[in-house]
Structure formats: C-alpha cells, structure tokens
Length: 98
Image 1 (spheres, one colour):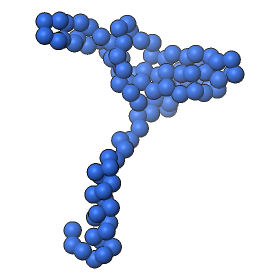
Image 2 (cartoon, helix red, strand yellow; image 1 turned 120 degrees about the horizontal axis):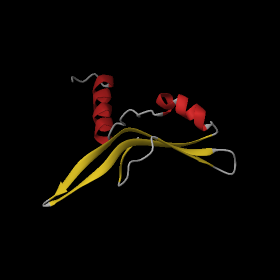
Image 3 (cartoon, one colour; image 1 turned 45 degrees about the horizontal axis):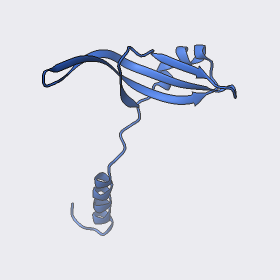
C-alpha cells in the first residue's frame, strides 16, 4: 500500500485490460481532499491509499471483492529490530540474563 497524491480526484478503481487477457488494477481507499500550505501558498490536493496488482479477474469481480484485494501489509521489521531480536535470542540460548 502506498500513500499517493493527485491533482484531480482519482477513481476508486482503475482497471486497465491488457492484450494478454490480464488487467492492471489500481485500488484506492480513503480518498480525500486536503489543503497543503507552504509559506503564503495554499492549494488543495487529493490523497489516497493505493494498491496495484495484475489479475485475470473481471472488473465486476474486482469491484465486488474490493475489500479482499485492498490489503494493507503488516509493517516489516527494521534491521535494528532484527539485530535486537538476535541479541535477545543469543542471550537466551547462551543462558544469559535479559
């Protein structure tokens, strides 16, 4: 899932059929108009959360199953998180104290 910005209101579903029978699909959720400012400048911009995938589903199937395909992935651990977990595991395996 990406957070994206548009100058015009985006469609909730963008379905682009391909020559091989597949389709490129963009699903957008939480579409809203927000105001941005920079010093004295102020403007409105459309923001949304977006996922993209390629499928052989029809537009109707994608539309009826929107919530199943708009999946927000779990956050991935950082390198620092992994190093900390390895250090804790090492302490446990070597009998050290936490």
